[in-house]
Length: 491
Image (cartoon, rainbow, N blue to C red; front, side):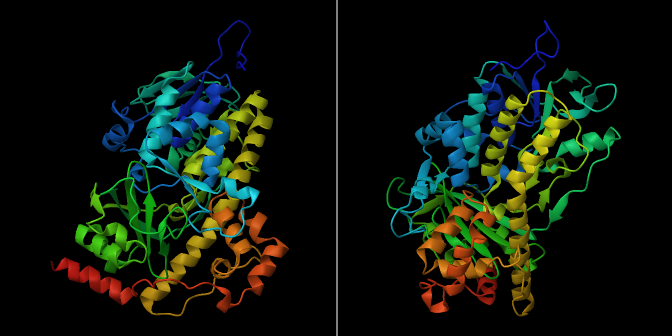
């Protein structure tokens, strides 16, 4: 399909995508495949040449601070790639990524159902997947990628109701059929609009109160048996009552260990050190064998990051004034708690869905903008609301453990919806509940589609504490964890 020209006899202005990370590259790919000329504007330098796995390790991404941390592509992300970019999935597998069958990992159990074919996750480092996507976009006809380019402001038509281009930091005016904000968590469109005197609505937010510490490793025997079971289907470890520790397998025998702790908790500051991080990992159930020096070698130092709040941008919700020709995608539209690993998959889903909407409704105007806002909200809002709830529940529980208080009660997201703790407990002894929980955790169904089902609620209510399977090994108490960190400090 060829994008229509703005005026008869003239070439169409390109779609300008601001930001060349996962969301921006996916949007560029999807738009180009639907006939739109595309220009990607990226602030950072291009990646190095060479084999994908090695180049990805050397790729410096100062504008993507989360890029060097653990990521997963959930079943939702795999579904998007299978339907919209199967060759990208095949390329990732050819470069050493692996598909994890979550039913084989014991997360579903019982007789297979049709939905189980989609219960897979892609084990790959974000940088490897992003590099493959970048190279594919650069090879597409009709796409140009400009590096070292920062957008300063927007161009508008005389009434100021439609975006017609962007102005770079160097003062260059670049025309655009429409502009896609893929600037990630900074959501630059909000400042562009504000600077132009155009009011923006309020963002919906909810704190995560979380910081993460990540280290990547390489298995001593890649391709051999894993150091330990993936008790979480696509991961090993747990989110416990005062901290979290999770292993995520990746490509080419690599994996990441990420340890989560509350912000402001000075007792866990030593997780920044190799000795403290290793001590905590070796105390954590299911994580310990992966941190054994006989099984793996560290590839990186400890990378620390304070997790951003959950945010649903005003530009991703209907009911606010929408400037025609400006669209936000990925984290620029919505950010959810990184501990639950939804970001990359939602970015891919949003990018391809937005491109298809723009192909189907190519006329830039209010109706197109309203459709795009409704689309963004439908994709992101269920996960934003669930993330806000889960972040609040986790933060309150962890804070109670630190202060020695009883566990707090957190109301459910929706009236009558079972609490996640009750669902998890019932999942231990009920295959149907376990499968439903996994479908939600992997993004294939929204929480409302599964958790609000009368049948599902009934099964959760019917589950007795004795119906759950053994909880498995217990994590260290907070006192034991802090003692191990302190002991490491003295070494």
